[in-house]
Amino acid sequence: MLQQIRPTSSISGAITLPGDKSISHRYAMLAAIAEGVTKIENYSSGADCQSTLACVRALGAGVERLDGVTSIEGRGLDGLRESSETLDAGNSGSTIRMLSGILAAQSFTTRIGGDESLSRRPMDRIMIPLRQMGACIEASEGRFPPLTIRGAKLQPIEYTLPVASAQVKSSVLLAGLFAPGRTTVHEPVRTRDHTELALREFGAEVEVEKRSISVIGLPHLQGRELVVPGDLSSAAFFLVAALIVRESALTIHGVGLNPTRSALLDFLAEMGAAIKILDVKSTGGELIGDVLVRKSPVRGGILEKARTAALIDEIPVLAVLGAVSEEGLVVRDASELRVKETDRIATIAENFRRMGVAMDVREDGFAVPGRQSFRAAELDSFGDHRIAMAFSVAALVADGPCILDNAESASVSFREFFDTLQRVAG
Ligand code: S3P
Image (cartoon, rainbow, N blue to C red):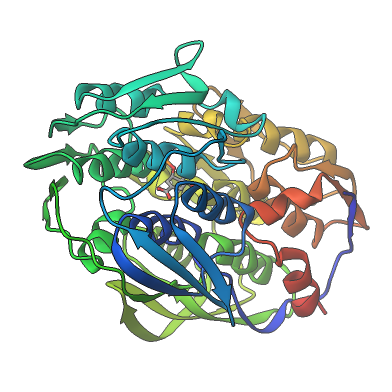
C-alpha cells in the first residue's frame, strides 16, 4: 500500500493507544496455560498479537472477543493439544521465541514458522538454553524458522543471557514453568520485566534479585481479569511528532510507564523535551499514566550500552528526532538493530538518503548530525512496522508531500496508526 503523508503545522488533541504489544503477548500465552478464563481489556489490535492469539487457539485454548474484551479459556499446564497445522507466528519474533518455551514442554510435536522477515531472524538464541533444559528443536539451516519442536520433559537450568533479550529471558522462564524446581536467568543488563510481572499476576512464584530472575516450576496458574496499558513504544512516534512539528501540544492517555520501558521519557526529558506525566496508577503490576508533550527544541545526545538496549525499539524514531535536534544523535552498541524485522541501521540510512539527510553508518550503530531538513521523497517501510511509522513522522516535517511504500506494515504493531495520525495532524 502506498500512503501519502503531507507536512503538517501541528500535532494536537488527546489520544489513547492500542494495548502494549509485549504485555499482550505475555497475557495471551499465560492465559492459555492457566486454569479458567482470563479477560483482557485493551489487548493489542496489532497483527503480531493477533498471531499469538491464533497460535494459542490452534493449541486448544478458547479465544473470544466481545465488546472490546478478549477472553481466553485456558487449558492448564498440561491441557494444550497438538495443532494439525504449522503454527503461523506471522512477523512476530516475540510469538515464536516466547511460545517456543511453552511448546518445548508439551507431550506433542509442533511446527512453527512465520513470514519472510521472521524466517531470516535468528532462533539459536532460544534454542541453546531450551536444549539445555532437554528440549528437542530443529531449525532451518540450524537457526532459522520454521522450527520443529518435539515436546520433552524439561529440567530447570541456570542460564546467563549472552545478549540482552527479554524474549530469550521470557522463553526460558516460560519453559521453567514446566520444569520441576527453580529455573534462573541472569541478565547482562536489565530488560523489560513484563513476563515476571505477568507470571506473578497469574499466580506463579517469581524471585528477582538484582539481574537474576527465578521461577519455580509446576505452579498453579489461575485465569484472571487484566487491562493492557497503552503501548509506550507506539506512543514514541506521537511524542516525537509533537516535539518536532511547530505549534504542537498532545495528550496521550493511559500509557504504560513500566520503569524497564520508560527510558524513552527520561532520555527525551534530558534532551530538553517538554513532557509531563500525570495521573499514574498501577494495573496488573504495571504502571499506567497520561503523558503530555509540547513542541520543544531538543539537544540531541548519545545512546550506548544499557540505554541502547532499553530503547532498542524506539531508535528508528529517535533517529528522526536526532536529525532535527540541535546536536544530533549518536547510537552505539546497537548490533541488535541489524536482526530486527529489517536491518534497521540499513533501512533508516536508506530512507534518510532519499530525504537528503546525512547519516554516518557503523557496524553496530550510527551518527546523525543535527539541524538537518527533510526533502520530500518516496519512502519505503521495507515491510518493517517501526520504519513505516518513524518515516511517517519524518514526512510530517518534509518540504512537501511524501509517499510511503509498504505502509500497511505499520499494522503489525499499530493497526490504527494512520487514522490516529490523521486525527491529530492539523
Ligand atoms: C520484546 C523484546 C525486544 C523488543 C521486541 C519485543 C519483548 O526484543 O525489541 O520488540 O516483548 O520481549 P529482544 O528480546 O530481541 O531484545
